[in-house]
Length: 116
Length: 110
Image (cartoon, rainbow over all chains, first blue to last red):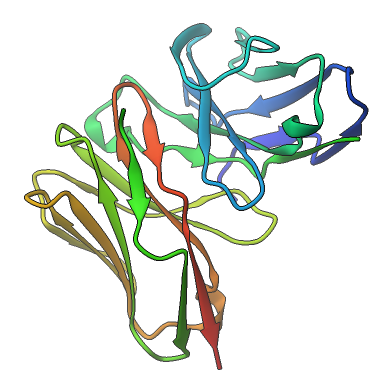
C-alpha cells in the first residue's frame, strides 16, 4: 500500500458526459501528479499540482482539468468524454521541496474509466 | 522531446533465472531514474531508484545499473520468482516531470 488513495476504483459512463476522479496523497506529500494509461501503453503525464498550485502540464486535453484543494487532495475533471478517453487514470504523490531523496513518486491504485 | 524506451516489450524467463530489463533514455541532463513494477490491475509500485552520481545501486534481489555514457539503464532481478511477473517501467527525471518508458512485461514460468 503506497498510502495514495483514489476513488472511484471503476467508472463507467457514456460519451459526452463529465466525471470527476479523486485522489488523496500520502500524508505530508505536497505534490500530486495525474497520469493516463491506455491499454498496453506507458504512463502519460497529464498535470502536476504542488501545494494547491499548478506546477507542470503534460499532454492534457483542454476537456480535462484538475485542481488541488487546501487539504491537498486533488480532483481530475474529464468532460465531453469520448470513447478514446477510456483508460486507467493514476495519481501519484511526492513530498516535493525536500531533499533530493524525495523525488520518488508514489502511485495510487488508479481509476479505470470506461466510456461507452 | 524527451523519451524513454525499453528494449524488449516482453521478456520470458524460467523461475530461478536472473532477469535483465534494459532501458534507454534520451535526455543527457536527466539526473534521477526510477524503476517501477506494475501488476495487473494495480498502480505502479516503486522498486528502486538511482541518481546520476552513481552507476550501480542494489536492493533486495534487484540491482540497477546506470551507464550515462550511452544513456542506458538496466534492472537486474536475481533468482526471479513467479511473483515477479509484471510490467516493469523505467522513468527518467525530465524538466519538472518523470518521463516513462512503455514497459517490459516479465513472464516467469515455473
